[in-house]
Length: 92
Image (tube, rainbow, N blue to C red):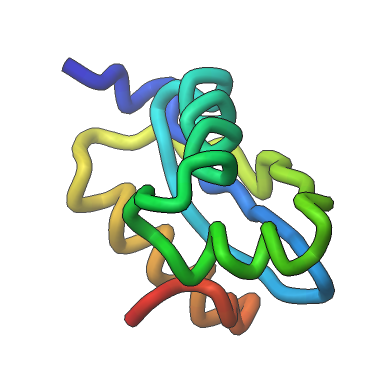
């Protein structure tokens, strides 16, 4: 079960575009994104396609720490940040 006290909102940048996500385990999520960049069948094809088109040059950083009570609160904050940053790579 996720520990929402460790929740963060993160941003991936590649080729001048942004993707916003959230997780309770940043290191594990970073490893998963790295794997998906190399896997042409990974879900989230738009994000990983853009990273591949940008010579696999990308960065992922914590935008803000966001300890919270549950996934709903985290998802709402993630959506707010997506809109605030105009995250072009998030599929809506």
